[in-house]
Amino acid sequence: MEDIEKSRNPKISVITVVYNSENYIEQTILSVINQRYDNIEYIIIDGASTDRTMDIVAGYRDRISIIMSEKDAGIYDAMNKGLKLATGDYVWFINSGDEIYDENTASNVFNALDGSLYPDVIYGKTALYDKAGGLIKITSVPKRLDRYSFSNGMVVSHQSLIVKKELTEYYDLSYRYVSDHDWIIKILKKSGYNFNTDYILSKYLADGFSGANFRGCWSDRLKIIKKHYSIYFYFKNLYLYIFNRFNRVLKILLNKKTFPIA
Image (cartoon, rainbow, N blue to C red; front, side, top):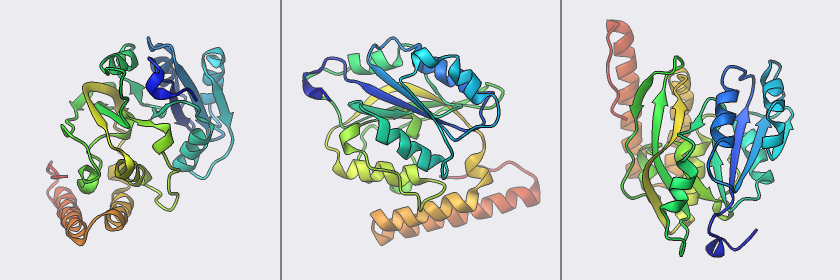
């Protein structure tokens, strides 16, 4: 790998994990291969899909650096496979259903840097879309990012995090639902220079995963908070869990929309 501080256009390993996603994989692929940035390694990790996913992927084979299709132990196992194969200076996970925001995003990000010192972590906003393609909202992100930023949850979507490969570790498979939360905290404990692009970096398909797996996501989150932070942050998140749990139950009982606080 070339010395990143001497390179004017660092190599980005974009990794897409996919399984049975024939309705969304093509838009994800197009968002990557149409980037106006000429140093992208594109890796697709498929979990042995049984629908038309791999037929669609095969149509773009000449634009994809590495394609792997085999059974895995879940999304984070597949993401670890992508990390093992990545040879870029940076890694960027854009999984099926998600997209890089527009064709100029990658070039805009690296043109915004002065080139003398490349950040450990690059981050930005995310545009959340529903399955019909409607914009739900643009997320806000902290002006500054450090290890404590994630003590209240995923304040930056993983689709809008570009991380130096040398700082990455494999995802902990003991966390089934939100191992990306643990992953970025471990990176931020080692990082020194984290750069807020102030750009929208990605489009995220809000598929209702967190809501459908409410208890599992919160169980993982509380374990991760306990692992990385003081007891204060643990009880703060426990309060948020109880509040949100109560809110969900109240919503069901009253059949009325309510708004969680985290």
